[in-house]
Image (cartoon, rainbow, N blue to C red; front, side, top):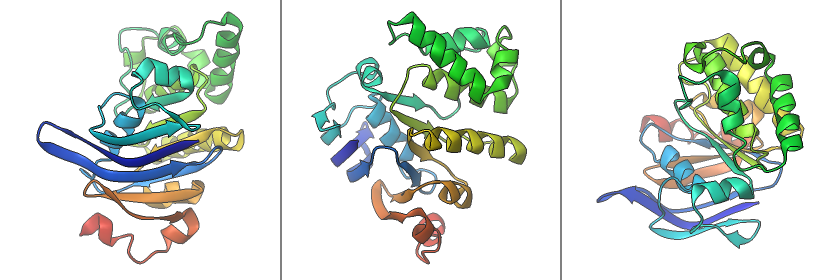
Length: 233
């Protein structure tokens, strides 16, 4: 579904990712791993169109999308759940969810997507009129995922879904992602909880120093003796 070749990007004189090659297959769950500062969030930002690529290509279903702005990539089916959630804190849960439908012209699809999100996260239906900034951290993360799902994505990109959350909430969020994957959603997730994500993902790759240094099926990667070295040096 998604093919990246020779992708480089950075900020000012700093190169955050260098000549990255990456593929995400339709219906696959790919876990993007790596130490802090490896360039993972930059790579996700480039894929979503929020960070400009300096060189390389990004192809979605064979079509070059590198020059497309974020809203047009969203219409092509790429939705990002950013690190830190970035909800509209002063708006209600329902308003945040409906903000995710701006790329959809069909009112019936908006209603169906809202029903789907509320089925996946029943608490969002209960808290629809509550101001999003007053939700717990886990509920805010559910709202952020739900907002992305409202756009009917084919590829859901999730950046650090479990950051700072209690273990019980983490289990609930991963159960929701696993259900989306079971339904056929293609997932690309950045996650620091390596054992947890590799227990669910189909495949994993490790980004270190701005480059892919290790990749393979999740079960094999989990037992690779080189995996810890890329996190602790």
